[in-house]
Length: 470
Image (cartoon, rainbow, N blue to C red; front, side, top):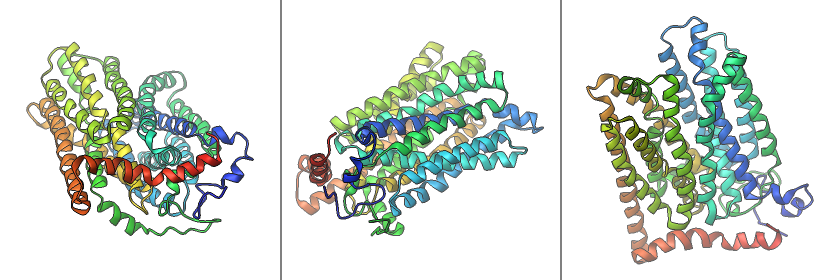
């Protein structure tokens, strides 16, 4: 079967696929989702494994001001995320490759873990953490993009929710595993474990057989027989994305939720200790509540986004998060704190899956802008928020009279700002299309969500399905 006039190295010819071992399950979007999900688990696990043990190693190397040095290591990781996410996205789309950047990201993770555990000085630790940040950017940009390449548009939200659920799973497993390995094998134990855990991900990733579904449209993919023919330069892609109100609104939300993602981590232990006298082990158990709630939220919100629409889920979850953060600011009973903390992060985390689905939808509507492009922009904005958030809350908690209340109210305010920004920009999208086409509101949203996005790819998806068995 002839697939397209623009096949590339991301999408091998379908007549070759049938002769490959296990090509049916290896090209299934469920298999791709599973591999990307495992990759995100290992990514968050490798980060969580090092957090409890790094202060002890810094002391063993003779350093003082361990808390400050640990904070700068986290900053190095976040800064590397920011600087590398966009170049990785441009590389993936310009050269029509998914496997190579992701594979290099996994190998870079392994190298970074070895560098960190053998680091003789602090600057080597910082260098290793920068390398790990770049490796994380490769997996977080390329992984969801590859999953969107394989998945029909009608289930992208659900699949993205499944993929994102790997992050809380990794964080949930990381701390207890780190303590156990550190106790029995010393400082090197957690890093050896995370390096070994990355190897199966690389093997599974190389098994994936890409197929030309929605990403096959003109402007998204490149190259024929190794020849690169991307019509959109990086400058043109940037111009196209900045002209898209949906992408700009999504980047604003990504920045806000990047801040909120690590907003409470630097201050919750101090707050729990000062108010209720909790020790380190008890504080670790408290962190289970937002982790479990985040796992449930990303799965449920992704599923709802496919059925009720991205905008509805984003606005409702953000609105429902606001009162819980307000209550959290005045919670004086420990049992109330646990329940409210669970609910606040449940609704706050519910934005993430629809947000990724919105970026995928925006990419499909703009010729020349690929999935890696939009996810590179998303991860760039998210990384800035992730880097700024903990620093800001740490300063607020230490220097304001009632830092805890101010931070909780600020979290509520950020959710409100996200709703306002998303709604206002959404109205601009609606007005522009109504002015151009003279259509009503309900017809506008039908055109945006159905005709413009799904119908554009229907013929190509149907052509692939006629030639292959799913």
